[in-house]
Image 1: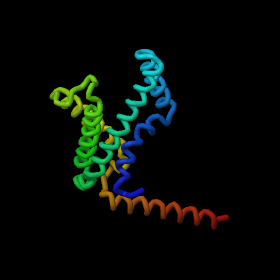
Image 2 (image 1 turned 60 degrees about the vertical axis):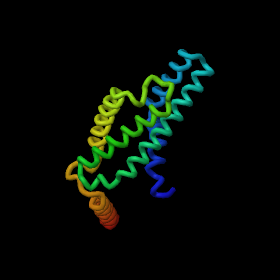
Image 3 (image 1 turned 135 degrees about the vertical axis):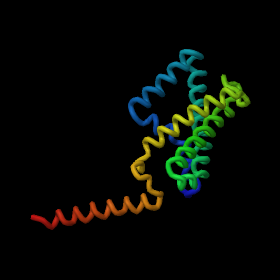
Length: 164
């Protein structure tokens, strides 16, 4: 896959990653069951698939924005947070735009405030889960550190094989 297409692909399939664990499968099943109870079995499955399609397309849009703003990582932690905030906000707005008859209206300013709050919380969570947290090295330096760790691990393995 092309490098420029990778963020779009990751954004589109991130929803399937959330359903990989037991909790994700249970959530998906409960969502499907709730929709089937509310609107009937046939329309419930169709509505579930539509919601899943909207999530995939909105995730792809957010992933694309995340890839476009890759240069913000040079700003350090604030740039990473701003990149995540923008990507999540754009994904939420894309989801609202794809559901014109839904409960939300795109020109509503309260929706923008709510989406901005959710995006800020989500970006903060992404920043907390970032494994480059302690000194926040640049992406190139981070890759060098990973290579150095792999080299030491390989050298330790080789030394341990030589010892009786």
